[in-house]
Length: 78
Image 1 (cartoon, rainbow, N blue to C red):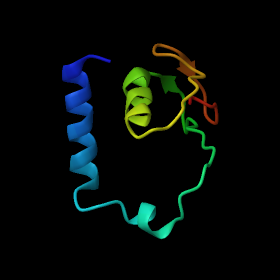
Image 2 (image 1 turned 90 degrees about the horizontal axis):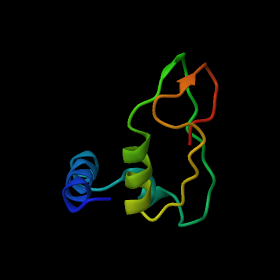
Image 3 (image 1 turned 180 degrees about the vertical axis):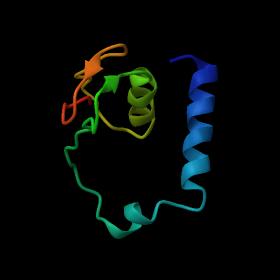
């Protein structure tokens, strides 16, 4: 991940969280598994950036579908 991209992604995260993430205060620190699943048919874009944002927050990510992949509803993406 390039330095400029990392700076921009960190800026996006700080804009979204601003004064804190309420859910992180309410929930204890614990390992969880999650999936990002498509809701409708489409073509994916930006998977690399989604992965990088998770990495910046200390998460491990497994990419199931890559940029340009066609997805149908209820398919696992990440």
